[in-house]
Length: 158
Ligand code: FES
Ligand code: FES
Image 1 (cartoon, rainbow, N blue to C red):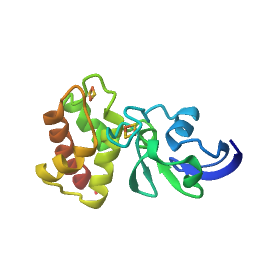
Image 2: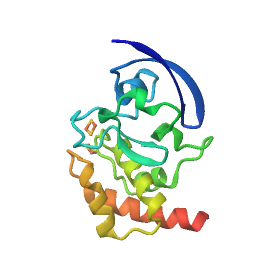
Image 3: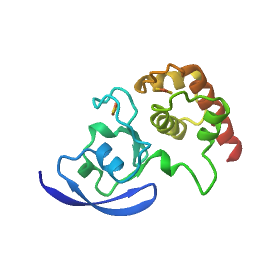
């Protein structure tokens, strides 16, 4: 495997990192300590590894790290501003929408993407986008309610 220097931004921070030519974005992010990015299926089906790449929802298990050259990556670690939680995180806490929690970072990233393109999603639209996120604990009802409430909170804060 060849090694290359990669320049990219992660959660607003510029980085130059040595990466393997076949290293996946998922592995790079975890190697750098972004442990919210989880590995589930490794085949693009479970959404546990979801991140935003230039604002677009991506399965990081299906993307090579070198494809992130000069791009901006957002993980859940980048959601928190100082000590303040993101409206989605507040809402998930309020609704106790997390059980074991393994799928939740990926779902938060999916929800953030949805609210960026559709600030007022219907329940059906939320359920539709969540087809790409598998929660083995099956707590979808509270997850959907939490996302719906977060969309209201986000709009009130604007
Ligand atoms: S680990 Fe990437 S979609 Fe499941
Ligand atoms: S909360 Fe356990 S997998 Fe979703």
